[in-house]
Length: 79
Image (cartoon, rainbow, N blue to C red; front, side, top):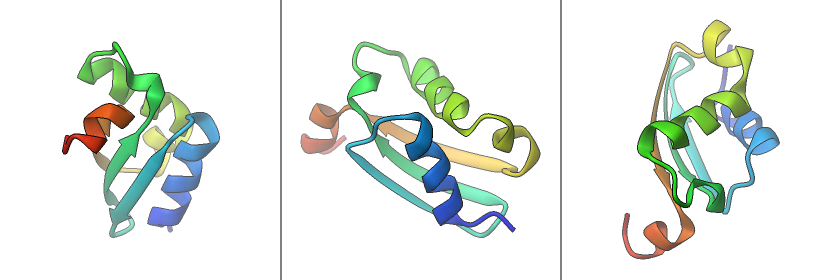
């Protein structure tokens, strides 16, 4: 079974994060991802970076992932 910790590890392995929180029930997950790599990118581009970090797990193991993706500046100012 997929755990929030394993999803978090997958994101961290492929994306430099300043802050990362993942909660979920084994199938549906919610993530708060703060990364400088999001600067200048659209919401869709930010989500694509997270999906890329998770790779095949996104298609095979994780049924739903909702994300809030922020730059460090956006996070510090309250999102």
